[in-house]
Length: 142
Figure 1 (cartoon, rainbow, N blue to C red):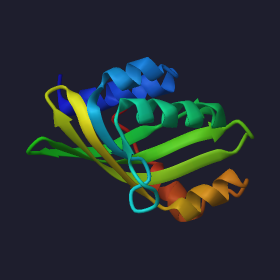
Figure 2 (cartoon, rainbow, N blue to C red):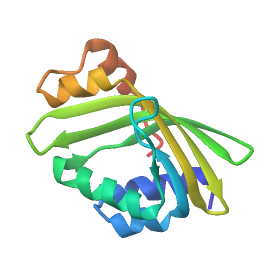
Figure 3 (cartoon, rainbow, N blue to C red):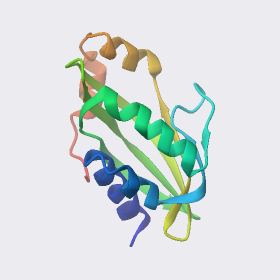
Figure 4 (cartoon, rainbow, N blue to C red):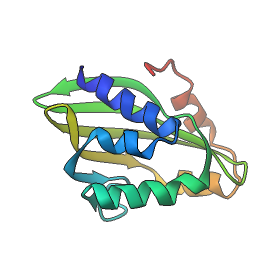
């Protein structure tokens, strides 16, 4: 399975709310910067489970998509949009770039970079700015 297909399986498991399926694709010693440069990383599967269990109840529908990707020396670089409908009914579209590292067929590190201000405004009910809508109006690979 290609590294992109492993990430797409990770995304599909999250869309299905299959936390065990997400965790099965992670190395036991995962280091997950779910908000790189904003929050401390989650380290290990147990803490990753706690993060997923905390995020899940805030999200009504996951629409996470990948637009582009490249691989180099055990790393997958991706550009996409982490998009979802919150349980409050707000559409949240966070364009992001990410780096995914692997040990064999498992994700060992994940770093996600996005603008938290754009996310927080949409969580509060504001529409995504035009430049964000333009970024995410592309064909996705997933």
